[in-house]
Amino acid sequence: MSEVLVVIGVGGMGEAIARRLGAGRTVVLADFDVPALDRVAEALRGDGFAVHTEQVDVSSRESVQALARAAAARGPVTQVAHTAGLSPVQAPLEAVIAVDLVGVALVLDEFAEVIAPGGAGVVIASMAGTQASDSLPAEVEHDLATTPTDELRALPAIAGLDHAGHAYAIAKRAAQLRVRTASLAWGRRSARITSLSPGVISTPMGQAELAGDSGASMRAAVEASGTGRLGTSADIAAAAAFLLGPEATFITGTDLLVDGGVIAAVRAGAATLGG
Image (cartoon, rainbow, N blue to C red; front, side):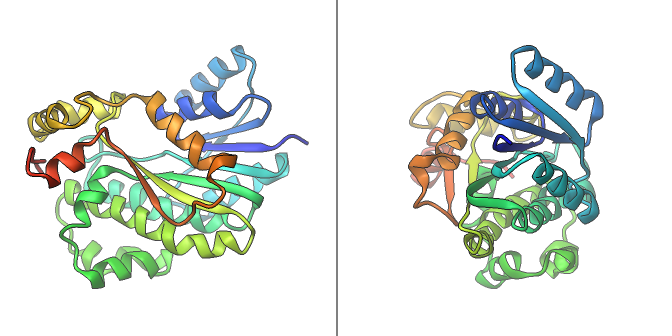
């Protein structure tokens, strides 16, 4: 059996990663949105990729566990890219918590049970999580990193949230932190896990954010950054390919910020980002 690449989430980044890494592998695509899943799968099959699809609800342990088992039944799972997520302009508070916080934790838990020796995973976090790290107390970060997945929603820092934007930032910081902790479980299987934090990327989700309340400050920060441009799905796929590939075998339990220099500009005082 050929090696298996699992891509969870078939938005712009997920499809780009599948195209970048899927040649010669069995690609298992997963998403909650079946029409979108089928559309991307057919496009990839038309270009010669071997694709299997699985519907998944990342907020459900049973659903994520079933996906992990189905992927492992196809062959050795050597690469996992978790790209599924909701932005605060797309979904209400509870949905952001369910998908961006709990969903990431469940994927880290369940794929730690099936990842093949020598395999690697990458979780798409966000520069919003990097920005949140400047203000979250150490005890909150510890709780986000170490609390059992099934108890995350009850954390005071989560239960007290009243704004989807705040939930998104904390969930993305939690993704970065939980990857650190998960690297130990993944390491016991001789596998690696990292997170990748995109900046403002020109995907439908990114464009929706730019059209939202904080869009003006985001555009100004991009213009002030070292690259001065929006990112593309191809930029993220290239970074994911590095983290999942043979040149990154000594990299695990950490985050790669792929934001074109936006956070650097903010921390240098050249730009601000609205909340």
